[in-house]
Length: 135
Image (cartoon, rainbow, N blue to C red; front, side):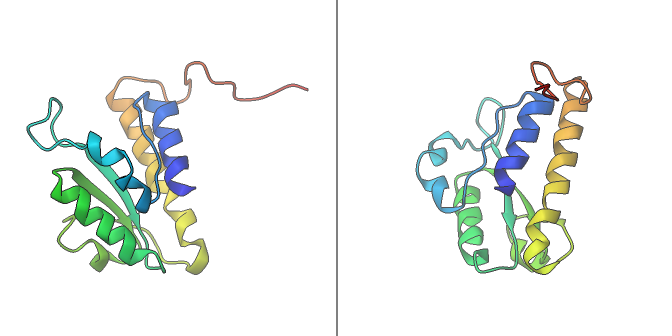
């Protein structure tokens, strides 16, 4: 759910296609879209949430697999050693037990905001979005 929320914010604010997947689901299609530095737009950026929980090993394996295919890996983690050899400068969030994943939403939202500014989009006025409903 956190990856999907991050992808949604990137789409809404910067109009860049993004998708949120679990680490295991990357093998079923998205691997085919990964390009290395020789791709038309350079290496495909892939943001991974590798938190110090029961899924850390699987997420680290997914990160190793996308990096081996030439992707530019961006890691958000609460334990920097989980990014060793994959991302020299991971985004570190505070560890807060079962609520740690919730803290990972913030860097994704900031990334979406910064991407929108870089693309010249107004993050406060996303197009074609209904911000409130009247019943």
